[in-house]
Image 1 (cartoon, one colour):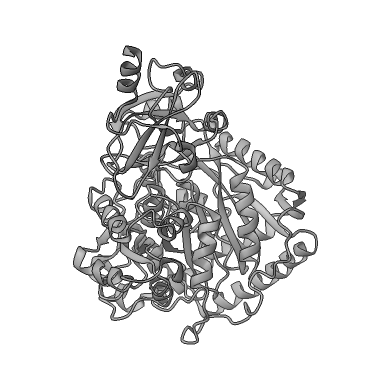
Image 2 (cartoon, helix red, strand yellow; image 1 turned 90 degrees about the vertical axis):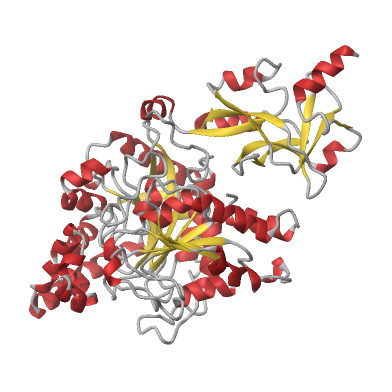
Length: 599
């Protein structure tokens, strides 16, 4: 799956067909769900109206033309059941949620509803009758919650972006665990109409995307004031984000070292330190800050009366059918029946005191960076102590909406075991676009692969641990096994994965120059043929140096394989094949070499 931005460029450049791309997307979504990503996948009849409304439409006239997206199943899509992860709660809405409709009007195409921690209560992604959602990199690990399915669908390249919700970290924790950007907008910036509430005063729809630029595109479409949402806020107009944080000259807060918690994960500590160093290299000036007021506010969320708000959201249902709730979810939500109104006021008073203490911080710094989570757990580890492990994951996230901050989770590298690690940037409310701009620079400076599409989980977990994260790269010429440039792969500890063929949509050329002789693979709309190639797994930390060694007119782009997969691979600029020998009919670089030697 290309990024949202790449997909739009392909549509507008005539390099991709809407109906073919959506058909490929639906085939991939329906091909199997071994990670429990989906609750409902639309059938062809249900998808057709969204395609029909785009027939004959100029792709440039819709900001999200033909972009497939997923919807967390506590957000309404007209005519499709909303279950909130509880089958007995299911209802079929007549209208889509306000934000969903904004996206559809912009040309986006919904493909299904995703799995979640039931009633959006959890940060783990395991509290679902549909099964625990497996991490995109290793299904033995949690995907994070509650928006687990939405994150994994994007990470695996099944959709270009997805909607989640974020009350206490549900749009940031899954982003960190699946190597994604997770945008938690300012409360009230995106309408919550058509969303099953968790804590109505704190909820926000969130966005999962491969890049900050993609998340920005979704925000631009969906940040519309909804007068029918009582919690929508107009104070975002006219300057969303204020544009007051210069992306190349800013001050950022870092929690005191003794207040940072990694729960024994030293790899996370090293990666966080590296992210802080990168922010400095990008023009940031760090300042140590006292994190205790934030941590105390975080504890209020579950240790205080806000659990009563979760109870109030589904009070009638939980009192009528308590047995319908997932065990740990029922235990948590029913705990909200006991706090007194006096407890709620006392907690509000304490929260306001903490808010005032944190306000002073913003005169010294523009934003703060923290780990998104200190560590990650296996599904089995969460099952052994679900409440404590969930609490660990909320250490850096639970306070955000209580204190009314904007936040963006950003990938920050990979641990030695191959699992991703992430950091979060946060600032006062309505600095969403400022944070996205800095997040984009931080993400880009790391030369990381996007999502998990470049690293399917090998059959043996030990292989992943030993070799770390890798990127499959398609080669069709001198880098193939036994040929003159294969050493460039072997020196980077790349491993041969498989022989394969492209989809029948490429022309193949022998470029002038050499030695060694080099081929040019050119994507075409018509007259293409399937070309033989090899796929190699290149370690992600060596991918950048490999790409840097490639001379023009060659480069690395996305190559579609015969079975529909898309991988990184050698492509050629169109101008580079002018005057080159067209060897498409041979379909194989080795055959051309053999024929050449005969002459």
